[in-house]
Length: 105
Figure 1 (cartoon, one colour):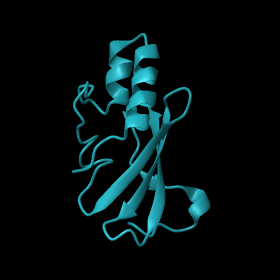
Figure 2: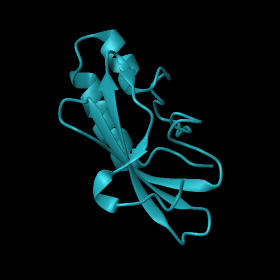
Figure 3: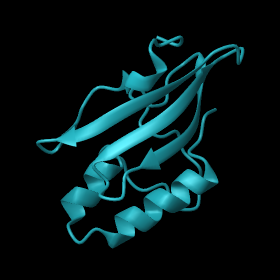
Figure 4: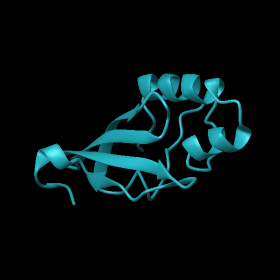
């Protein structure tokens, strides 16, 4: 089971705590309830998917851009994905442009 890393959780918690608007905080969690003390799969079907492992989440300081690492199930390929908050919704994850190609797919 994939879970949000402790470091990622702490960074995301700090970012959500800094939000003044409850709707904005909800958007950062991809409309999920904050996980609290129990680890939980983060954004299933969007970030957490079958047959791969997510390694970290990195939010931009303003909370409007998210980068996360992914490796395939046998750890033979690695990719970085990027998402942006646009008009109150997250864009679809895309491979970061500086990698050139997306080995995970």
